[in-house]
Length: 395
Picture: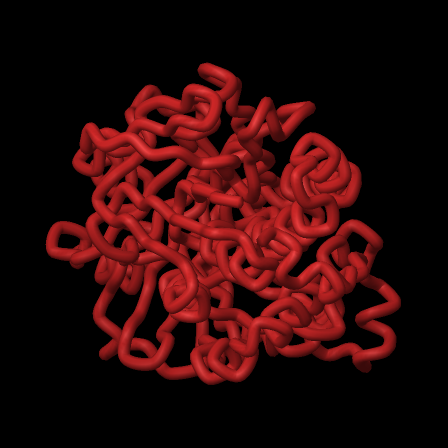
């Protein structure tokens, strides 16, 4: 059975790897000319996603490229910096956790599948007519199934459902590369002010600066980089000399990402021979809703359910949706709360956030885990099903 996957970031390569393992003939198409290097932020992998990575044989590679950030120095106006140990905070949310740069993770998953999967870079889907897929390059090919793994602004979703409402959480995110020279390894530097947070961290020989801020919906196209940079300067200039130093590098940065933190709330994630996976179908909110772990888990489940019911994609799509629906719901709920908690709107809120993080970091591990709410540990709650009996089922 021939499967086309649109998108080569996280969910796409994971789905491709498992579908190939299950015996499907897999092609991945990616609009970018190469693997994307967008200056992407650090992402979190929790226990279930790491279990899947182990089954893929890439857990050691992921561990080797973890950011290694163990400490955060939090700055507030008029207050002394507060040092927070991050290890216990992570352990409070999951029994296993790895933080890794998104670009690094994408590369690891791509390399895991590249020998068994056909990759088409520099192209995208322009139309889907039953089994016939036409690409923007003008070429047409036949596929039995199509999977949209092309992110929040999914082209596949647009072809499937038309324009879908994106629910704005009230915050925006920007990330770009900065010089690592002034940043210590293993340390994150955070500057918190009501309605805005700036963070920078070093991972190996690279460094990223990330900016979160409350905002009304911005009437700016998500690819309008110049306008996004102007907004960032307006919102953060003068917050702190260190932040101004990061902003000074904005004009020359080789990689820049900016987007509104929005959610998708579709009730269904498939139609006919096409299914959506990861952010393309149910983005809970970039950087705040655990979307990376959700993408890994859901891609694994989709491939497994297709293998369990060879030749019956409708049944597989339904089983896939049933398996992930509760996790998607809880991820959305968590992200809405996180958008407010991580970017407090008042000085009291900033003090509570910093004080709470400091408290969890000094509590005994058992107590900090006991205080973690069920929603906080949402991505540690799934059981990873065993689809190994379905290997080669797609042939």
